Image (cartoon, rainbow, N blue to C red; front, side, top):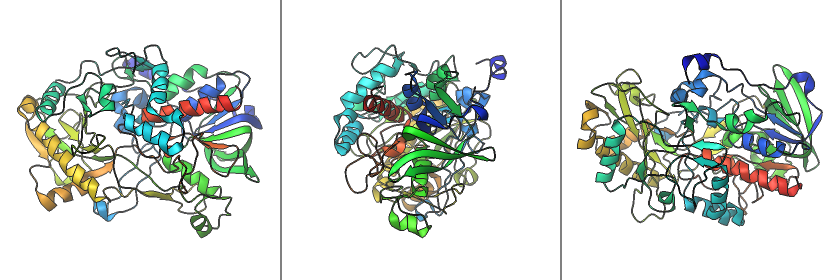
Length: 537
């Protein structure tokens, strides 16, 4: 967007307090990547009333619209500001866990990468749920329906007339060509569509798919699904509305209590409530409402409504290192989404699914420790980082309540690198990234390697523990499945509770391979299909 158009942005049109109804057919809690989809799909029937509640504010601000500025939203009012509890596996650090607090959620503040997930991901979800509606072929049908793919045509895998404008970065920085050649030199083939056949097999390297248009204008789920429906009488959108509790009649969820600008409101749901608050806030609200592990609930004096020991457990996140960094010879400002190269590969050839997913960060990128330890250049155009990342971590964490006060942040035990296999995979990933970055193909863009350098053994492991953090992909904390640790079934119903479903990344039985926005949209689309069928709407 031009400077003039950015300055002329009109804030979201939300309903006024005096127009809030006492009841709606459906209440969608959370206006993120899945919540926007669910609200839109339900509201497509004009006879159905829908309330969408979002704790954050408007997404019509320059730092959201300009996709190259996504990192500058971290730590602002558009971020929940969560961080992990100290862990010895990251040398006692408390890594930040940014999560979108704005209409559009993560899709409004992330790197705009559309990574659809590997075939094995969805087939595993279907097996866990006992429902083929979640398998790869079924999910492909949804992708074909919602995508407007601007790359190489692929009639089986890609859609051409959907509502989501998906393309590859236009005119990427020159470094990208060197990275592609460097990756090919170590056996990672270039593919012209990282979301195509590569995600049914061994992976590859190339340009990511991005939700960007007109150079660097973000295409979020709020912009795509919700903004065209603003003003419809059957869809009410209330921003700055923080949900603090659920209302019940016995085992049935009947309403939602939320706080908005100092006032407390309770609104009823005649049909269902859908939780789309993300993998941290969804289990938090469940536990505050008496749904969770009875020992944890009793510890905070919360009456047990439904014992579900899996609530808050199985927490997963891709682990990202900040990272392998090189100073430019000639400074190069970021373009497009500032992350124009990715590779998906295996740390061990015997693995059935690729487990590595490094990404280019077109800036110097260090953790709170490594940025001080190393002499990193100053300024976003001064350096580039090939950030190692794990696509299929074995480490598992958990979400616990800090207190029974709904306004208190929960305790998040991310447990990054707690599995020995993750350290082994990350060591290999760093080795591959350094080999690519230090190759002759990247020499024209490399003045020096800033970090980590040629560290060995315990020194490299220590660097990794100091650099490890979130990939911004919190998930899996209210998983879908059929065992005793499952929270929802294949139709996303919360076990033991009527009128309550979950539609967000928390229901993933295992984290998807690649950035989680696209699979989260799939979860929202599946929820819409399921609810429409259940209520004949």
